[in-house]
Length: 463
Image 1 (tube, one colour):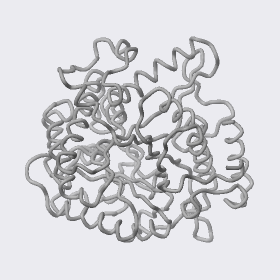
Image 2 (cartoon, helix red, strand yellow):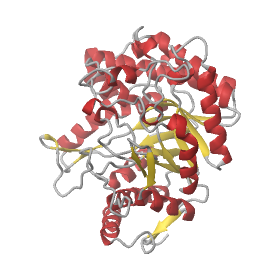
Image 3 (cartoon, one colour):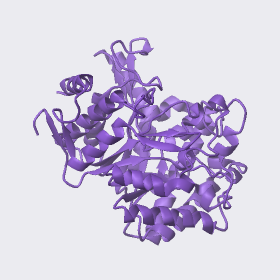
Image 4 (cartoon, one colour):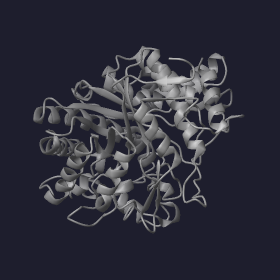
């Protein structure tokens, strides 16, 4: 590889990702049950502008159109989540066959278009009926999740090869139950840590259940990893960054890959630590066929704590620092410190203020630069010896961005919500070209000089 030509391994999987509640809509049709996000978004004051996922991108009715867009974008993989309340309205008991039929049609249509389905069982939309009995704080829910996983593996395991149990347990654990910004909206650290433990237990039980149902599937977990990096070389800054890493990131990595919680994190949480029963950690630490890594940004830690904003850094509409070299450092750390399975970048993307131009297109140069800068770092990590098998851009479509409603746009495809018209953005066209070529070169990836300089700056930082 030259510094101007970034090619990827021959079988590298190029994809894009979505989540059920963020795009499907059809929240109360065809037997779908209520989810905690239905309840949360319908509660006044919880979501910006009073937005809900009731319609979202209407993907439930428009999935064929969306798959055609994926085909035009040369996507080789599509990461989506199943709505648990759509297939099991109360979270347990009888299945909703109409809901299951929807995912049957979705999977068959993806395969017909030559797109690999990459299925996530849980992307935060717990059936409200299970929340009524305590949600994830109730260990019984872990067993219900394993039953749901077995149902889905039995139904789709003959066609879906790649399965993920949870998307980002740390997010729904801490943001949903410690800070309260996400559903169900609790603010209780001890509760959140027990919920995190029970979710990890549910993951292990689901892995066992799926493999008992379909032994040849590839199954894993997706973690949101937000590294904390010291701004300087002082031991105090290094220690502070490591403490945050162990409390928030390693708190989920270590149980999965080492069968125990991180020592420093455990000590820091003190009386808030979860109840762990004999045998729990062995169940949690099931062999992973792959690990999904979602990466968006970092925390930079200085002598007085987190530095925000970081002088000279670019920021997205979410207020997140753009730091591509951190992704390479993260991947290398995982590779060196853990016995890590093959890795997929299961989410990476940025929200910017997109504008439909007079020509009817969206010229989102900053998103192109963001994707390119991060892909350079993925390629560098592969050269460092990290086994990265694929990359899923977040997100295929503009969508419901949780507590921010429809105010933030991450999509490669623009959605005009009143009309549901889709327009592939310049970033989507660039990504389609990248997938087709299995990489990109600086001379052909676009004429915009600012894009080139951003990527070259990222490369220089990483060397």
